[in-house]
Image (cartoon, rainbow, N blue to C red):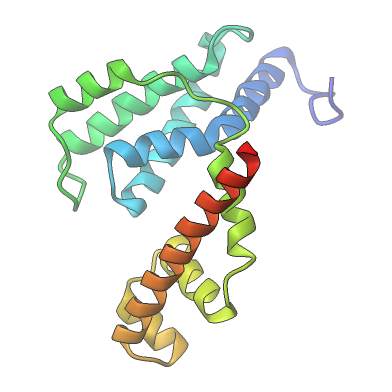
Length: 182
């Protein structure tokens, strides 16, 4: 038992263990949510709601059973709830299509996707201005006009920088994936 879990009662320790599993699978859960709900801000809200449900229902999860299947069910219901409430600004597939696609998907893998690790490595290879633009756009969820204001350049310049950075990252990840197969 870890030092953090010592001093907790059994129920608190179980809840902490389930929350730890959520953190372990969080990147995969987020990817699943975004695949159905391509709105980063709303996906973050739904992720928080999923964590609250996981915490509230932790006692019903039996350690040693399939956490990915359990959390995937919670995630699917929270995404559908957000879609029914009309919270998405983006156009999404119908619930019937998402359910059909969901039936084809496999469970989440722990440890994340290899491409995410390669992407992190490729981010280190980006030029400083391109890395700042990517951070503003995808970590801080700023739109190009906001990024232009923050960086003191034109919106067109930001769009070009983001486009080139994405192309560089895509090629870098593919190159590293090919190199790892050799």
